[in-house]
Length: 196
Image 1 (cartoon, rainbow, N blue to C red):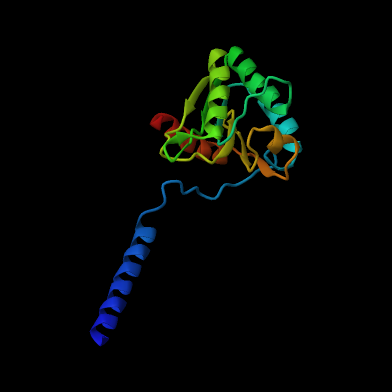
Image 2: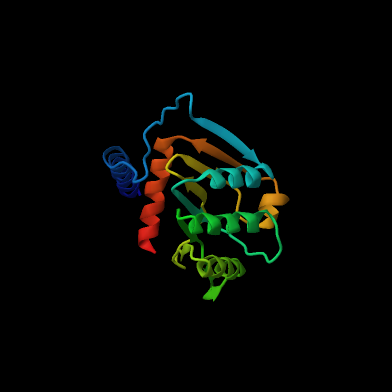
């Protein structure tokens, strides 16, 4: 019994040392250095319905690129804030901007989920209008809600692109205008884009 306790304690020490060494010597892949802000940069909290109006405004001002990484992106025949965002992405693509979108496709117990079916409807609509859309691997869930605009603006938080999230739910996101942060998330997006 005493031998087993000593062996267990030794194993715990070795495991802890390995964990510490790993975290000390090998930085996480997405480690971001502290980003400084100057007076021309900003942080804007986006609560509930504020998200759609502010996001529409930021995409409208885009001059070079709009990248979207989204868990849920529903398609609606009727005009609502989600459809306005999607149609604005199509307009920006038609204006010559680089518009790229990654959305989740989910499989549960071997069957495609309703979320995945909805996302594919949106993907079809956007692709029919020339926008470059990729679905993630069915082996992983892309739970992000992220936009990167012109290498300067990042919008991230809890808002999916569905009617409930944009017009009914309590949701919280944030807009950050900072080139370092945008570059950090752009690197993250491009790594995922190249996987799919």
